[in-house]
Image 1: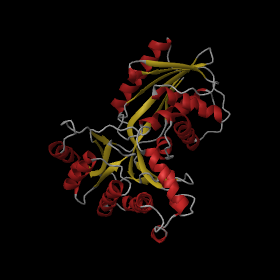
Image 2: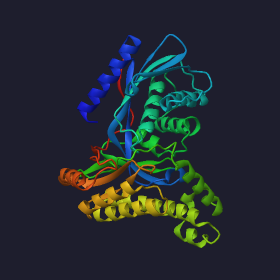
Image 3: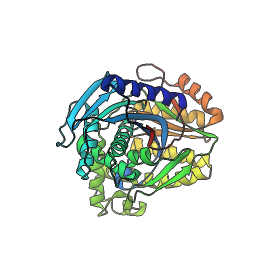
Image 4: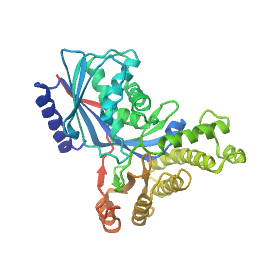
Length: 391
């Protein structure tokens, strides 16, 4: 993590905790956001993804209280707060952040893990509505904080990710796959993480030192729960049932074509995206290991076209931003939409020697829909969840 950025975040959440609860927190836990380099909407189809954690994160300050309530404070939302009985059934709230906190507590309880009274303060710097998994970062940080605070046993980092995914699926209301939570929990510094979303096996893929990861916000905000994300998941499940496979991950390109005659055109395009995206993701991991930017550039371009034409999750601003970035990069790097879709960000793999010029090019040739400058984030591939301090 960028040292100065993390220090500011730590100071902010610690001071908010002290102001609210009158004492220092027992510990601070941080979990990063993520950017997916390639492999979109493949995770809930039991497929392959290639994300990396980024040096933007959520920090949770936590300590015990004498009661049985969990009391939580959202530093980034004007000091909004919540309080609930840890052992009682989940009760959905209007404010989504509260559902994340309550959902993690309920998901731990569902696993038979008992929570005691806790005081919590939350602060983060993962850009909101950008497709950089601020929600997964929050969920993983909360799960780790509860685990450490209450000395819960039997949860490794993969277990923490599964708790956070369970909360999203069953309590927050987003039918996300495991990718976001798993990379936030398990990422390695300086590497992307190739994940098999069926077996949950993960392999670190080193990112060559001369490359940077740039994330550029289109200026179009997005939100998974309110988008067509869940609709796409249902369409994929229906396509898998048509082909009589457990998940689209099990479908080959040949089988996809052979069985398409009785499948409606929309479902076929959805399935074609997933099948081809899995193939691209495996090839991209090999290209990254080989530092083969020509191949990686082509694979990222094909991925974006598939998301635009077959999965239909891009928007005009995103398409324009990718077009502008590709004009600059050529075959020296790659660019594509990243995240669930319908707005948010693009990700670019850029030679460090060209990063500043790339940002200047974007500023010169792209404007957000409200005629503004696109927010530009130069990210470092970072490690997963960690305890920053503990008394």
